[in-house]
Image (tube, rainbow, N blue to C red):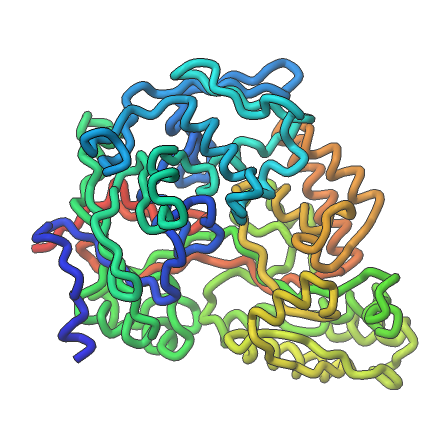
Length: 530
């Protein structure tokens, strides 16, 4: 029955329809709430931003074809395309989409920062804008952004889906229902959304981008997202050719598809395509290090030697091969992941498996072979329990007693935000492609989030403040590396692995590159079925 109805929600007889499943559902199509991957993927099809990242994570033009930066690096002036139209929508006279202007960008950005919107993206402009006229439309085709102080990663922030340009008329017409009546300038427009059933987006015939031969993008006629909440059902549909790709592989069937070295098993070769790409996501264990917190005062984790012993005491390479089928890279450098240009494992020295060193550190801390050291509780969520148990078993061999406790994700998020979790599993996915985003997690003046460990080091903070105003890339990267090394030495975190985007694709899917932010990029995708 499930498979008989799998293609419910008609895509209107289109032939070039890209089909994927969003097992976690989609909460909103309003970019002001584009905080998780499922929403970001849909919003990326429907809307455009001033600038965007290309497949190499470089900032490139989008709605703005160029921009100027003032000598003091406080004023960014964006020059806009004059051929961008909003999708047709009943909010406009006669239902016809109008041309986009700089006033739409001013409105969209002010809407994000307006407390009444309650956008989860409001933080991106916090303490960064000039007191007056931070956002200003100078004329129809010129938009000005004025900063309070220089902030080198600002263009990266502007590429986030939160900064998508919306039409005021649609926001005002639909009110709270704007979440399901999106109106943007993106390559696809909403056709229908039956929540829990299917989301269908169709080609925007007036989309402004063209390929190198002058053909208007996108090539696809439509996108259809289904909402089966079972990864097993999703995999079955993919096997039957009813889905064009799967993002990531469920643990229960990854051994069926992949070898321990992370390549396709022989019986899948020639039937599907496996693509991998470094992903800006670091998986880690976090350790609360705020010495004023009662949890820390009474814990052996307050000692740097114990935190370092944990880092040395388990085999990341073995863990990745046997529990992850080599999806991802063992995190033996810093907190900054391998997909960023500032990453350099030869410069930032992390931890490799060294049980002898772990035992030496335990003894130096006053706990030879772990004698006299109380057990430490590690909080994790169900899908990572096998990894936590593996780490706990290996740490026990060097004398560290770890008790794994599986909790609901919502509870773990609440406890880490309130500094009530002493030792916890976490992950940090990049909001924008700049190492500063990872290092902000340790800036002493930042609250939790993002500073969940409550790490505070004046030397780190000084380097951070210097880095965010340093324009020269190579100098800024050196500062990032110095900060990363400081964090690794102080060990408020235990980096586990640098993640990978992993796609299973049908062979007929062409022009569908993976990228470090794992954005669903479909503008140049084609389906070449025989």
